[in-house]
Image 1 (cartoon, helix red, strand yellow):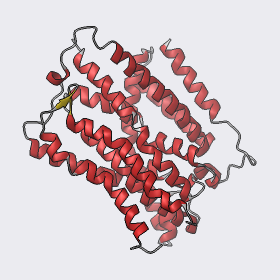
Image 2: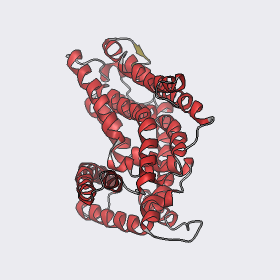
Image 3: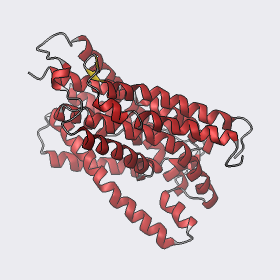
Image 4: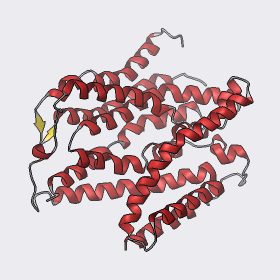
Length: 70
Length: 290
């Protein structure tokens, strides 16, 4: 699998997604006064990123599971 | 009652460490340090989770929120652990493959093999021991807090010394396989305890003198720009450092294959469901302290 193949790009993109989801909205969400059940929205968003990261890791490893040998 | 439960878990952990291995109970270095590289996804997951979520996470996270009344600690704490997993997804299988190439069973072995230098291996080993000292200190601070709740008629330093001797004997006799089984017991106990405490906190929320969470849990600080820079930089630096922390990297060589590591790594973020539960406990402490 070459470094620039679509499969590799997709895999790296999926692994980079949690970084984007956590880091990019943080400056905006941190300053918001909106709360959900008293919990600041930045923290609620971070909790939502937990299953999102698992999905990204699962999808990123799926292409490697087919026809990939050690 | 508390002491009885504490001793029961302790004895159970020691009993689990003596579960015999499948093929001959060999205690050569590869069996001792890396369980002969036989761990499947489940055991590797339990071991890695055991190394990741220590007493510092379980006590430090809610304690930090309750002590500061700020979400800053929660944001960087969850953020850096979460982002360490995508990095580990790339890094750990590569480290495992390089480790196979050089027959490494520890991180010093790997670096020594790669640079073909025993000096590099020795220096790395010494460095890792030094880097473990702050982590070890934190574990003993957490243990001291636990001992204080047991109210035993002995000074905390004596109890800590006993714990250190017991931990050494446990590791020296059981190796990594024993640590994995103890980690499984710890995971079940910790998740069960946190789930129970969080559920009790939720069901009892309306009782007592609760103050609104928004009044005691602060959002953005008075200097949001500086706080945000601190949170983001801490997440990035800690996520990178977390992946090569000695206790985390130690488990890599016990995996059966690099694919085993990937499969286990997928589920690691879901284990973090304990953090919302710990947040509930911290929020209860903040709103019901009067």
